[in-house]
Image 1 (cartoon, helix red, strand yellow):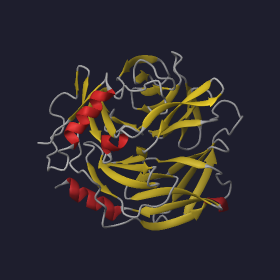
Image 2 (cartoon, rainbow, N blue to C red):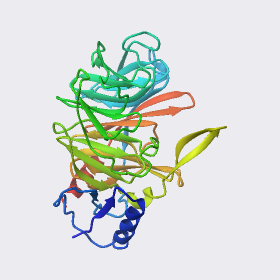
Image 3 (cartoon, rainbow, N blue to C red):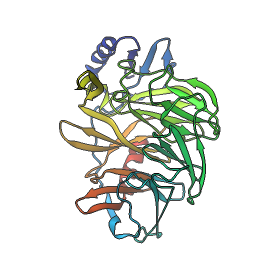
Image 4 (cartoon, helix red, strand yellow):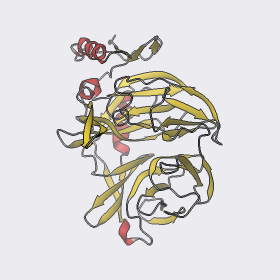
Length: 377
């Protein structure tokens, strides 16, 4: 039975000491024991190890299906990012230069592209998004978090503006996720709890969750993360960029924390710092070694994570089981990209080139089959 790492909230020294005790045995064979004991015991959080201690590269690799030069389409996006698929396979991306949402959809063979754009645009009043912090799609509605207003602007997938949601207790959201009952946010300025829940009109309901990494809570760069879309009802993932672990929440409770394939050993080299930027002015920064979750996308039972190694100047696309967070496989010859989104056995890639952005579609079906076979072992 493999061992677990126990992290004390109160001392980073204890965290590192516990890690060193366990890492000496990390090459031994282990079984995935799952969450047998409570994940939280007082001030202690249990962080599970991966069964694997190194990446396994897939034998298959992504196959390019189609490629489109976006500067050649009518009303092209100038700086598209944060691509998201809806449940029908239509892709949406936000253009930071225009403040518009671009919608892409394909012929059944993914060879022919159609496109439209909607939104208020910059400086156009209610519904505009000046600086996008987060973006989710839920039940045929697009939720776009605008830092400028501290509000979430909601559009239909058909392009109609619906409403603006602003938390009624004054908190400004930094990240969020949404389900049938609640809008769940993380605050722009760290607050007492990790998450704050509101109804879908913005009325505060309750707070939950503690910071898993207590070191440098005031450093929002160090604490930065992604929140996944909700799945299986109200489940969602908390995906820190620099900590070497991922966390699963269900029914507003923490139920699992597990290392990424890079793990705490890589994350310990990400050091929070305060840096002087001008006379009498300092800023919180991070001395970065590895972003253990740089980007992500989920579909069905699959979590696709892009990790970035600053020293090697390289990315890996790692595939995990969405519910167990077990590492499965790493994508061979992953595509170059600025951002990506997963839908069934296809990955849409946005790539900036010297002449503009390209939108590429890759087939990863054979890689997902390898991952599925490994999960059954």
